[in-house]
Amino acid sequence: MGISMAVAGTWVERWERQQQRYAVDREERFTVITDVVEYITAGRPRPLLLDLGCGPGSLAARLAGRMPDAEVVAADMDPLLLELGRTHHADAARYVDTVIGADGWTDALGLRRPLDGAVSTTALHYLPEPVLLDTYRRLAALLRPGGVLVNGDHFPPGDASCAGITAHVGRCRAERTGGHAHEDWDAWWAAAARDPELADLYAERARRRAALDTTRPDEDLPLERHADLLHRAGFRHVAPVWRFGDSAVLVAVKGD
Image (cartoon, rainbow, N blue to C red; front, side, top):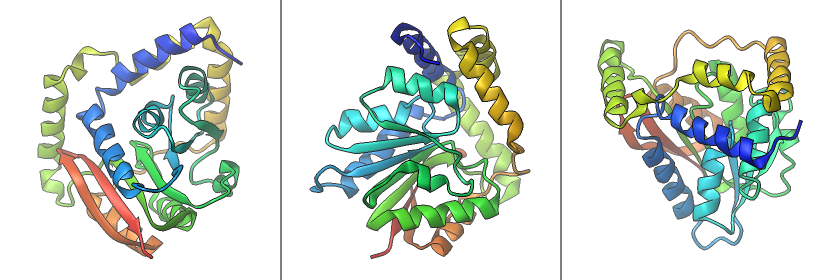
């Protein structure tokens, strides 16, 4: 199912543009996440990092670019996006095919030492609350004392009456920064399905999705609820370090 570097480069570039529609100030969010990881790993030789729901390696590549001595493990369940990452960002990470939240998903990571940091962007909000709590607990077990989970995602306000306002602010920001001008999620996948070089990978993706329950929870959890779950999972300190509209970067530090 291998693909050429030229094709991978084209589709990763289109992915980067497409994602700007959904992640407010996406590049700034990546930068903030990397700032946190760089701070928490300062002075540590070859820090070990985990990128959850890595897609085609967008965040992994930025981490590797800023922290060339880091070892990055990038995990996702999508065979097409993983192959794009392995081809286009081959030197950024070791890519792992696993379903985050499924039974035994951490075994597939092949970790031989504690993590210094785990990061994620727009990949954990689809997990039902009980699975999310279990995932947080598993991540806490994988992290060293003082290690961090840094999650950049959509966190609606706890006050539902303000949800429309914060969502509107985020949409306006995306439009001002040009996100509205790019193809959307559905258009990207429809185009990818028509590329002969991606056909086998797309078919495998469809087969896996059909075998999984991909039903989204009715509502995304507010930041405060994530913080509560993280505390219950063993993270001592939890705080947002950046926020705009519904988009935030939430940092959770494991206790000593």
